[in-house]
Image (cartoon, rainbow, N blue to C red; front, side, top):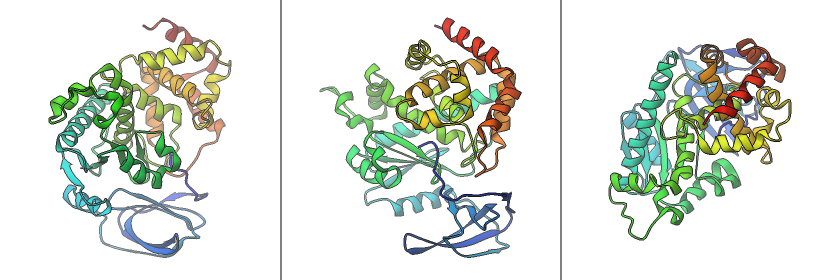
Length: 369
């Protein structure tokens, strides 16, 4: 899930000191909850945004705030072992943790599948960070271990996911939650559509062989898509709960779906070319100005295809301007939402006249193979 819908309406936001440890008591769903963490944002109306040591972001509207104190104790993110212990306490019995350099794979499926996930995510992490380094963008080391929850089967996954994403859990195989900073999915090797009678799943190598087949390509791409979101929001490329346009965040996630990072994405190219035959003249403007097309199920597939195509074009044909634009987005403040006019202005300051850019964009995408 790319963007958390924040109920807190904020104005006149100001960043808070990161030195003290803040203790916030809030009342939510009829019970009091205490959060100790780093105060990131204070609103003019008294609302708060607090970063907990487990990397959860808490949005606290003034109507829920019971008490707020601070002291001189320094904020300390949970180390890997402590975070793993906390996550396990929140999960049903039977879960365990497979730890890698950057990830905590919390799972109740086979160790082989957890190891495969850890290896695949670390491979993506290296590729992602190396890619942006080559592009001249200096990324940050994640402040927290990256947590992935992996359920043994779809049924248990849906039961858990419904509490976070609602009915959409039935139709998605995985998601990244901006608030909890966790990725959630299930063991893909259990899908009947991907299995063959002689399949064995006892080792990471056997799992890799199974998920390397063409019929698994789009399913695996979805998992990589969500993992890309998690890396982007933990490496300084993007900021959680800042106003990152969906054409950028989703376009980048789609850009990295392919096995060779940054290579042509044939399904998305085909979808964009199909859309191009009926594409309105103001398509680029509406894509950039707001996120409405992504949030409407009727237009979302076309928006995703165009977002991939636009990022692909800009990275290759306008690299210097793209880096500058991404730098601007990386500095966006949390819980401040831009007006469409501001988004368009920032885009045009980076890339120039929309009509000319659109013509170059369509011409380029018409030639790539």
